[in-house]
Every structure is written in C-alpha cells, then in structure tokens.
Length: 179
Image 1 (cartoon, rainbow, N blue to C red):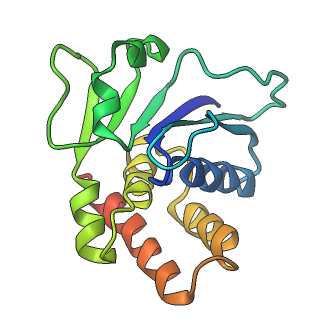
Image 2 (image 1 turned 180 degrees about the vertical axis):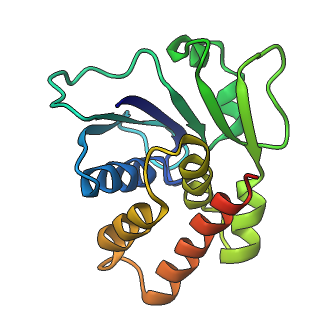
C-alpha cells in the first residue's frame, strides 16, 4: 500500500489535528507514515495543509505530496483556487466540506456539510472529525476503531471526556453518512 493524503483547511479548523489522527491510526495498524503540516506564520484563518504519506514499506522522502490519492477540503473556498488542483491526478478522490461541487472539476467528489453538522452536534464549527469518518469509509484503508483510538490517545490530555465522546460520535456520523 502506498497512499498520499492532503488535508486543506484554515488555521483553527482542525486540518493539522486531522492529519495527526490519521497518521497515528495508520501507525497503530503497523504502517509506515510520514506526516507533517505546512503553514506560514499566520494564525487562525490562514491556509493550512497537512500531508500524510502511508506505506507498507519505509518512506525515505520528506517532500510534500505532489500527487494525492485523497484530498480532504475542510474550507470550501480553497477548492475554488486553481493551484489547488495541481496536486491531483485523474484518480484523486475529494472529500469536500460543502454542498456544491466546484464548477468544471471532474473528479470523484464526496460532499458533506460538516460545518452544519458539527455546529448542531458540538455547538461549534469543527468539521475535521466528521470528514475523517467519511475518509475512513470511502478509502477503506484504515479501520474506524484505529482512528477513534488514535483520536482518544492524542486528545485525552487536551479535551474532557464529554468532548472526546462528542468527537468520536462525529467520526461515526461521517462514516455512516456514506452509503
């Protein structure tokens, strides 16, 4: 297995955290991973990218991904940027936090209104965990339980039990939203 994943978002939306959770989940399953965020000195609201490379074999390079298998777009406005599509290939699958497919883009798209769902369930707009659930289902590359365990491991000292449970429920919700 060789898998390249990019998560696009803005600071504060959880792109970096989602990348960390996926990397940890793949590692729990014995995969080799390279995961790193890319962002400038800006703060909340600035563009953020999280790169996750997964393989059955040791990964030697540290280069950003130039051709992704999966792209998760947490901020829908990023998908309207032309340079955004430079890191794609014909087979790239998109998970978009949106209700609309970007015009003139012929890729395999999965849409979910993760902002609305997280607002309703958490009382806050934190779409990343919902989108992780969608990714798990469509990629079939990592187990749901591994992602939930990774999330819990990474956030047990940062979030209270109620928030962890709410986020795990959102992962389930994203997973079950794809038929």
